[in-house]
Length: 305
Image (cartoon, rainbow, N blue to C red):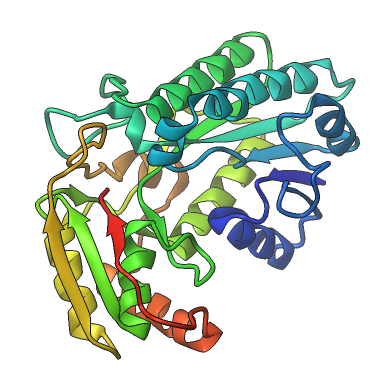
């Protein structure tokens, strides 16, 4: 049985479905399901770990701006909780393997593109520093005998239920139902990765980790850079309702650009992103329209990276 923390999030939901389709038993664990399923509660976490052969740890404060607004919660969720999780895994009679999710934010503003996994970690905001510290905790646990691997995500998108203040969902929301978006930094450019591709990569990492392989950090990235300005044009191209775009200044705590080198993921896991941003955006737009996830008056959403 595989314990999936953060099971109700964007990647968590995709992985629950993916694991089920592959015949794995998966146990959901997410505060969205019940207040007791709090990653910050070591008692609840210990109960959830009972009988687990592996842990896919996705639970986190996942937004840069949320971490800036509540650094204490970010510390408890992204650092203290993973320290408790690692301790509990090491204390199990039969130790489960562990995969923990990190972020391209740990690189900070890299000086060269595409960014490789061995590039220096230079986190520049609260969220990124918490993720880098979480990685250090997991690396230490590996030295103490835990089979654990780290993956880093880059602007994953694709669910109709995702937060509408995230970049691609915000544009898809406006494209589906109409409205305005204020883009803080139109020249900011990122590596957008479709959630179905990421789930496929994570499944490969689950199989490798379950087989006892200890790999260096791997980021699941497409290797393609797209500016927010070009993303806005893509939204207007496929929009089923009028979309207005308003430009603002970038935020001081945001990374302005990132594109990941996908070669390690391919060399070690045989994985590469196969969904273009154009196709992925159209798929998300269709999912939005099918779900009908908006009602009322269109509003302006502020987005950056």
